[in-house]
Image 1 (cartoon, rainbow, N blue to C red):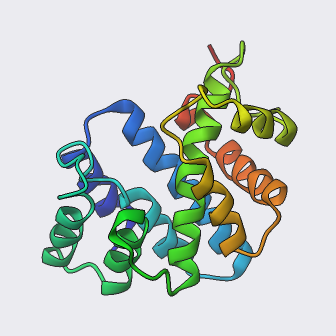
Image 2 (cartoon, rainbow, N blue to C red):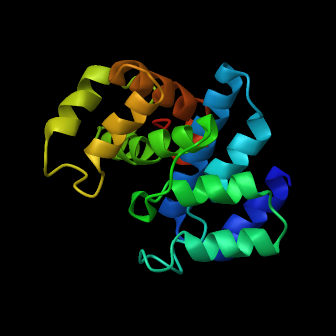
Length: 187
């Protein structure tokens, strides 16, 4: 289990540039939290990278992420990775047992919201994004309507963090890979 193999798997199943960038953003956020919590950074990063790898081919809840978990098991990925990926799907009603499970759920929707916030800025950058502007966008119902605000709030609570701190952390994580995400302001 290494990033190179996980990246190859992501690219095999995911062709959309935006979905790949979402995976990179979640990977960066998982890596950031693992580093700051003293957890297995590479494992957490791989979970972030692969959490939606099957989504493009299986976007409906009847298949995603269960089809992806089956593929990961067939390839020999550890059960804690496949279980964690399953737990990020709210509709499966699986208990988020580990800190890794809780963190994946906490960062997934927030990465989507932060990406949307950056893309509507004139400079398309996350580099100088402020928490106050993100919170303002969260309150705008029509903005990034597919992003589940209740999941972002519940995710921060599951990590026992104030929402503002969680947003700050994920912004910092995404800033580390901003050029890869296309959010560095280099138009």
